Image (cartoon, rainbow, N blue to C red; front, side, top):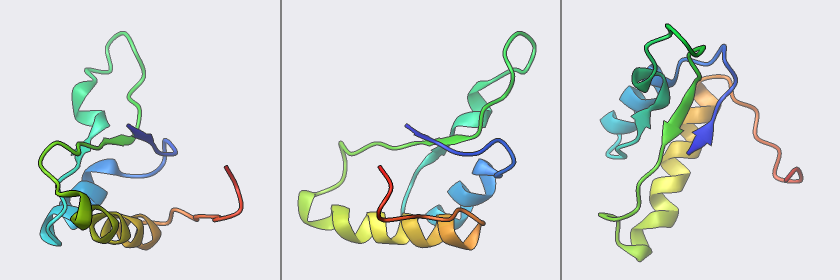
Length: 77
């Protein structure tokens, strides 16, 4: 799971990623919002991805995150 800031639309990121061939599920769709606040995030699965394809898939997902306002700092853990 990749938790995103609450103001980020995880549904839009998942749609953009899917349009580029990477399937991730928006975490917000699993919340009813009745007893727990809705959280933004992406569910990542690796079972159907060949190891040699993971780097490419993550580069696509990274670009989708950047295009949706996520600032990625390679020096932060």
